[in-house]
Amino acid sequence: MITVYFSHGLESGPGALKVQALKGIAEQLDDVEPVVMDYRHMQDPKVRLDHLRRTLQERRDSPARCIMVGSSLGGWLSAMLGADYAMLGCFLLAPALGLPDYPETSPVLKARTTHIIHGWRDDVVPPAPVIEYARDQRLSLRLVDDDHRLHASLPLIRGDFERFLCHCQALSQYP
Image (cartoon, rainbow, N blue to C red; front, side, top):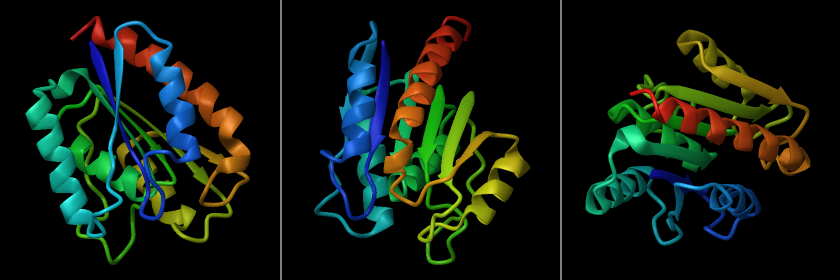
């Protein structure tokens, strides 16, 4: 079983458009269990990160069989866990990386595979630090003509995510 953890952004919630769209894809695949996190009552990124870590531990999910998916602050959370553990994968949407007011701005990922999608017109998380982050770690990066919410790119994101999940399923067969 592969577990896919979905982490929403600072001002959204578990019912967010991207979370629900990608969760629907995960639900269609055999041997994949989606877990949608709810951080709405937690403002501090460190508190959210501790909650995500605790959830992983309490569920006793093997990181090698987990995929972290996150948008904005949720992307930062996913990257931080992907730096703590050798995850199967990280799928990051407009991740809050390279921001000066976050506790860690460039976590080194241990995930077996990572894919980042970021908007050229993102005025919340500028694309330049994310491009540098992806370049430094040689991570898959797709830049799209979109803003921080990436709503105009949802069909593309859905396609990338479906391919990413299939790739992770194949990787999981060869530890």
